[in-house]
Length: 122
View 1 (cartoon, helix red, strand yellow):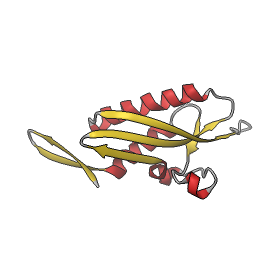
View 2 (view 1 turned 90 degrees about the horizontal axis):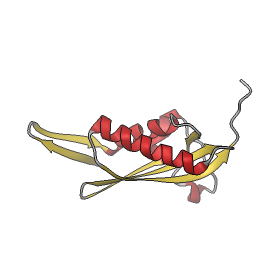
View 3 (view 1 turned 135 degrees about the horizontal axis):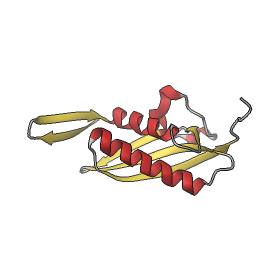
View 4 (view 1 turned 30 degrees about the vertical axis):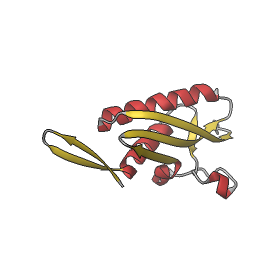
């Protein structure tokens, strides 16, 4: 499935996987986020920490009549304020998608799937 953008020069088709990968990349760069979680966590019964190649598995992009909504499934680090991390992720993802692809994002929904202890002994 693609998102079509029309302008005076023609049309541009953007695959939903592109949007998912950009959003996932912005999430894992955010402070307090340990990683992305599987969006099928309820079915699987545990929060699976996804690797770099699987960012899109923790992102759902919904396009209804040009209104784009993003659902993000994340795992946060122990000891961080979850509401602050979620707010930061929302604004970062919205900014990144608007500036990179020129999209108007209606909503960014955060689903915290777990809390992990961050290893600081390096």
